[in-house]
Length: 142
Length: 142
DNA sequence: CTAGCTGCAAAACTTTTGCATCACA
DNA sequence: TGTGATGCAAAAGTTTTGCAGCTAG
Image (cartoon, rainbow over the protein chains, first blue to last red):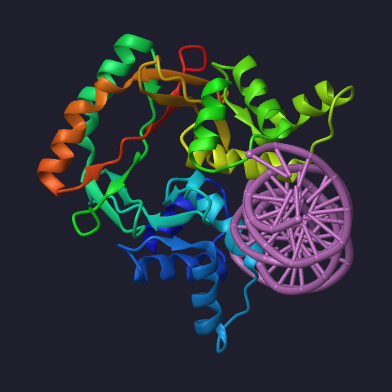
């Protein structure tokens, strides 16, 4: 939460109750990958006693958080995009997505280091420093 | 075109002028990755003198073609999905997508063989036999 | 104070669907 | 001729935007 405040201030964005509440939800659900709609619902449930929030605000906030590196966005084939908090102590990772059950697993980023280097060498294409989505079948669904 | 007819007949689907026209467009644009809307527009241009076609038909046809393996679908982050004809003589490949200009390049599939094997070994996750999307910056946009 | 945020509602956009009609086999 | 395919229009579903009012700094 302090990190949020620091990053927002650094970029000259305001620390609003809505932004704090959204970050709290993301933190409470860390490890999961939430749709904007999920986040909104959780906020509405909690929020009966506190503040009101609009779905558009959640969308706008998720875009903002992504831009400043607080969350990473995972666009799903046709489904709504999902977000997860970027945890800095955690190793960077890619996503393994099961085509059968939509379940997510993670693999360490280092596994793609060689691939990135080859792509740079052969195609002069600089692979972005963002999680890759790798589709397939998890051990249960094979 | 003969291949289309063969595959459709094998699956008990009908060979309609619309399906043939769509396949023709895909063939004429082979090497490119077309949005459904692009295909529709091209058909409307050409079609003034021939037949009418509806956008819904293009959507339905692309889904059908994908199911029977005639085209491969490339879901783009927020943008409309793009399709390309599956050319059997051509080597299987992955896509490099430039985050700046949306341009697509291709890399040979073999470059990810090691990665796939490691993922299977470490996570018992079977990577699907489909093109991977790798995001980054092309040589012009870096 | 005032620029940046927010909520609401409406719009934008891609994709899907219902249905009456059409046409391939 | 009968069933699958089509065109049209409307619906669905996610995300964006316009705008008037609110609020953090």
